[in-house]
Length: 156
Image (cartoon, helix red, strand yellow):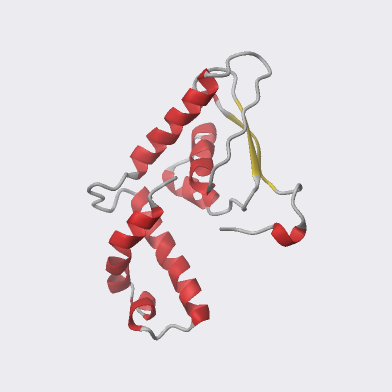
């Protein structure tokens, strides 16, 4: 998982100061309905800045570090299953799925985050690999939810 809570804890107050429309989060003027929308906007502002290396993360993992870590995990999984026809199931969240898409499709940071914003809860993403290298991944399917009843088609 990427360090969302750490990033928000450290940088959300700064973004609230920089973006006047977010101030209702701190001064108590936002309604409950507005708080959800404001938190969502603030969340993505922080994550977008993180992916562009615009934050002084200090001891918090950088986006580049996250990409490296997920790529290494994919390498370990594919290296452990070198026989033809091997199948791997990995249960994870939108961030690592977005990085898998980045590696399979050669996406830039912004496109990567824009894709992981679309990941639905309990969806299935299928990748194909023909070697032990994660850069040899191909995308077969993204965000499948046919196995779920309609009332469970949700995002984070």
